[in-house]
Image 1 (cartoon, rainbow, N blue to C red):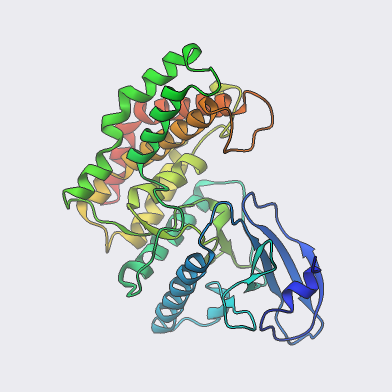
Image 2 (image 1 turned 30 degrees about the horizontal axis):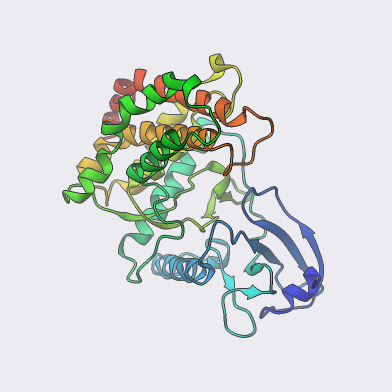
Length: 360
């Protein structure tokens, strides 16, 4: 097996790599900081791509190349400086490919963005900045000429997720269906409404745009001055409805509890976070959004929370085959916490609609 130094030497680096150390605690890809010997040469980010999730690595890497090149062009048109820190830069391998395959794993290298800082905790002020960042990101890609493909087919397709759920109920692989008819009913009672994005898409009412599809606050890098540097973690950038991107941030960032909170009394929607994100998002995204998209942003929050409820519960019924669990009932606990958040979002639907209207 090659060492990390040997791996990184398959790429077109400037400078001499002298050390490789683990970076961050990502759940999908393993990341490493590559330091170079020369003071005037950049450092690099080495990543092992999770081929179990991203099965078409060539498509994945070409998507990211098209996206980052287009953003770079937009930044240049705006007269931005320091562009190498304001979007990711892929470093090709010496054979010209955008990755290196060592016989077992796929690897890629980016320029390391120095001085960038991410946040795992959220405040209304950070939510506002993140909203601006993701809205601007979508705006940059609104006219991208290259075709961006799905890196995970049907990732945010609610109809597909319900098919998986109903198949899990029918198969009852882990013998858990009988004990949880109440949760099954909670899911089925909302199923028709929650598929309305797909219906509106087929009717030509709701357009698909290039989405980030993982809109968490820690996927925005900030500079030393506290201003936005760039949006990172572009593996799931693909076509989708903006409701999904908006909703996924609210699901993860505006939850007063945790995704798997054992105490459901902790779980609910933080409307100050919702308001901060909505304000920032609409400041940068309003210029390209249709009225129907803006009107349905609060629905997006319910949609992605419902979708994650369905996905966690489907995995629980299947015997916990997809998500990593820390204890036997972990997926059930996640399901209950997401369902509680969904119910609180439903209670606050009118307040969220009023917040959106207040910015128009």
